[in-house]
Image 1 (spheres, rainbow, N blue to C red):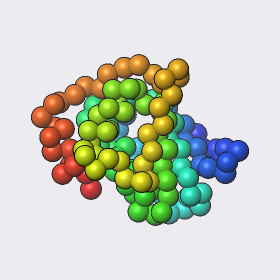
Image 2 (image 1 turned 90 degrees about the vertical axis):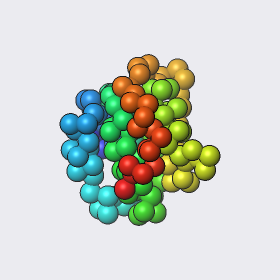
Image 3 (image 1 turned 30 degrees about the horizontal axis):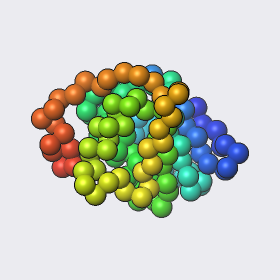
Length: 129
């Protein structure tokens, strides 16, 4: 589940709770009525969550893309350093799209390693929407 608030900048902040893995990715995407969110900047805060596997990374990226299609900027916060690296790999040489910002916070980001199926990352872009 997630808690929604609006921060001092007027951005929607969604604090996600619980694990994100292959069995919960559809639930993650279903939590958001993207067209109903009026704010231009969206924060997805993973401090109380944990990204477990490749399918979770695909779901996060797909969710960011859906927000981006609506002209919104997505700020991904409190992902583990390994998740940040794997999401960077997703975008390859082009880099992340302008609507998807990974905001690292070395002092507060959680430390864990998602299960990595290395063969999956070669085709990551084709697994996206």
